[in-house]
Length: 367
Image (tube, rainbow, N blue to C red; front, side):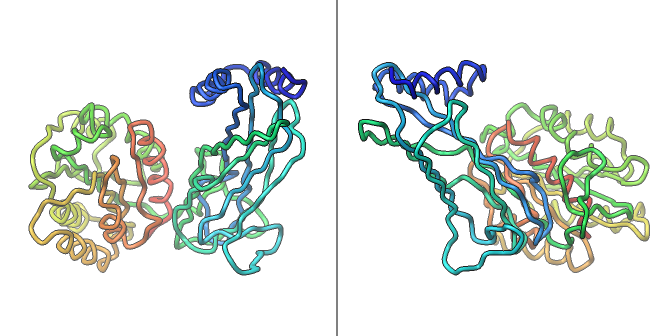
């Protein structure tokens, strides 16, 4: 093994256990006699306001097995999604799609870490690292390519970055949008249709959903914010009225039974009825949180859903959506929310907690 390869392997051993993907890549490299390379993206904040700079950190590691010629150079390219600009104190608007790029003619034993700043120019959800490429050139001219594990940035409408200071939510250690102090009434609209159990994310039933929703409920302010629960399939039922405590919500979720059909418009109408009904109180923000795989089955396709959502928003009700599974109708849910930044995705069960946490953070900011 070359000296460069020995240095890289020593750094990996010192770092401890590697992710399964990286370890697998190293084993593949050992079989093929070529170096392997991988990396990840992390963000200084995952939830920000427009025009609030975010630091992006890229970490790249490599492994060269016995028989490989070692590393000559490393090249990292990470194109930015539309809506993000490079930032070093001023926005860089040179025209064309910006593509941050770094080239190294050596690889330190501990690998490579680079940082840069981006500036979000409009609300939305941006995946950094999704289109990134990493190219490792070996001393014998061999070329190996890898990819970065991505990170998602959510930019929230209706808030402004703090001037001269960083804002923190009471329960989090990362900057977020400015939470509002006025109390909120929130209705969880939870899909219990048969498709929720078939796609993987809904597997495990309502009890699993109740555990995942704790991240959302943790974002609320006790004794100030009120929560209700509506479950829906072909019909929509109020299972817990406004003011129900967490134990009641969790118990109702645990009793959910899957049934055919998905009528999103009926869920929205039932949630609006609770927000405008006899338990409604003046001076409170009103929010619907739609949790679904987004497969509408009612007549008229998505049109009734969009109409029901528009009617709710016209009455001052904000709508957030959590899109579950690998094939939700994301466009329909974004149309219902009225803003792409108010729709959160969870393709696998492991992503549910983060999706609910983000929805909870945004629920504290919207009107």
